[in-house]
Length: 79
Image (cartoon, rainbow, N blue to C red; front, side, top):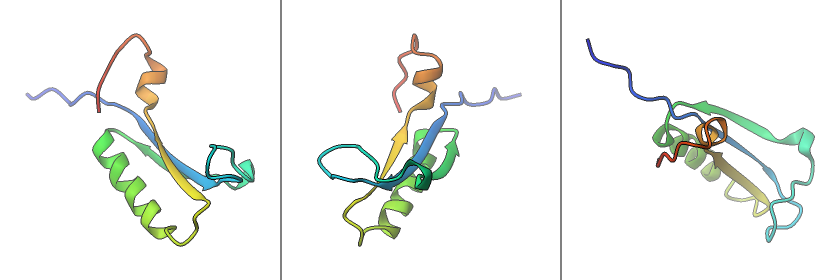
């Protein structure tokens, strides 16, 4: 029996920034929560898809949050 891979939870979300030099969103109610992913690779794929969809809007930005680091800050995991 193989052991399941370690779950490294990631969140992908984005929104329109009021100023591209800072991460301040124009409207928090309009944030796009893309989803939660069990590893960096799948989160990156989702992030890349959203970034490509919104490439014509210079103010729109998507981010990957390493939720596993926030849930267990004592652990130092890489992607």
